[in-house]
Amino acid sequence: MLNDLDLSGIQDEHARALLVRLLNLIEDLSADLRAAQAENQRLRDEINRLKGEQGKPTVKPDTPPPSTDHSSERERHQPTERVKRGKRATITIDREQTLRIDRATLPLDVEFKGYEDVVVQDLVIRTDNVCFHKEVFYSPTAGQSYRAPLPRGYSGEFGPGVKALTLVLYFGCLMSEAKIRELLVNVGLQIAEGTLSNLLIKDQDAFHAEKDAVYRAGLHSSPWQHIDDTSTRVNGQNQHCQVVCNPLYTAYQTTAAKDRLTIIDVLCNGQPRRFRLNAEALGYLNQVQVSQLTRQRLMQLPWEQDLDETALAHLLTIHLPALSDLQRKWISDALAVAAYHAQTEWPIVRLLICDDAPQFTWVTADLALCWIHEGRHYKKLTPWVATHRAALDDFLTDFWDFYAELLAYRDRPTPAERVRLTAAFDSLFATTTDYWALNDRIAKTRAKKAALLLVLSHPEIPLHNNPAELGARQRVRKRDVSFGPRTAEGAKAWDTFMSLADTTRKLGVSFYHYIHDRVTGANQLPALADIIDERAHELNLGASWAGA
Image (tube, rainbow, N blue to C red):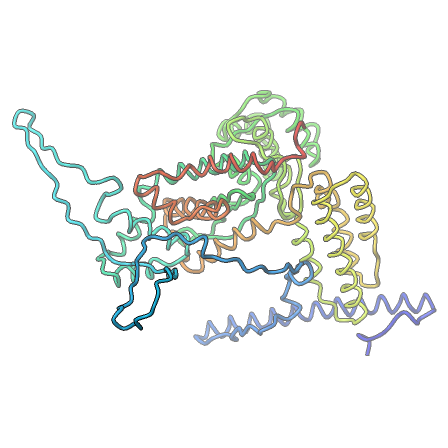
């Protein structure tokens, strides 16, 4: 069989080259066949649906086939010894009760030996409906009534306990509104669907302000940030959820697009767009080969001055009316990046850890690519020929061995090891095999050398973008349960409370206690932004940038 053919015993170079070409042609044809089969099945399913029937059911196997299992967890996983920790010392005791024995049932010679402690955890879920009798006074001279105020934290028909619980269940536990209402009704509350929805999204200005403060502190806490995005829907319309994070916080923002201008909007927390013509902007335009004549005409725009979007569009229409859409996009992007780097209102991110999507380029001084994402490209290769499968397996073994060496470097960086790992990268990604698709993939990775090896200059940055991807996964799970918000106000509530939920988790703060503290107006817990500032000072997440 051709797919089991061993080329190592073939001495004739011409014959070997012909066989290599033949086997790679077989790989291409088998890939085309798989794609055609999948497309045919999709079309059959669509025809059946148009006829009012059902398509082929999707039955997921216990073990995903190699063509769909792109996870690298098995290769990169490093098992650690599990240590069982006692939990009793961390349990808060709410009350104590002494249990006694009826001494009449005991032998006469018993001696009292003290107490044996047994800790039992329990939860009380019940209504606490209160009828407040508010004093009312009336002043005839003032023509005004005076009423006693409700206690702190109370407003409307429902108290702080209900408000805090609904927020935590919906955003922290990712429950649906229907299930939350079902729980509350079973406990004994009478609450309408619309009222519950309003409790989740209305009058949340204080939480929105704290989320903004968290985001500002998070951006300030380190010169590098993770970023990723996932699809979301607002009122049934496709939009995007941007996730920015580091070890101390997570921030979500829902956007209509995901281009480069949107990324700058996200890093500036939705501030009005600004554009600035300066030497940096011209440098970007030179990189994308905007003509010298166009760059000369751009010099008629104000130099080193911020412009809003309307003013820029007006000036471009006057001075460069013949610009194509692509040229206009390049100019807008270049001037927006320059304005972002010149502004002082928000911390400027110096390095993004992300995938190689084009919207992330230019925005920061450096771009560190995710090694896990890079490894997935190799996992997507599905060779049919046995020798090609062996070549891919051997290369992936070397790939993850090198990844492990980079992890070790992060813990103990030295100049000598930096030089050695740079040379090791060059050697590994100079590998050539008889499997042409693998060779193409290796060449693409080799071209990303600078972005993949930034860890050698900045050992504190992670080698992967898992934190942002996990944040995006939380949004996907929420989307699966609740589909999506129906208003801009609802989308803002989703962003705010999911940001606060993940940030409290990273800071080791109870999301329930935090929400209850804020809803009741107690404000005994410190501001999350203050905790981030304190932890950032302890962790020193930008150590390699010190003095730069």
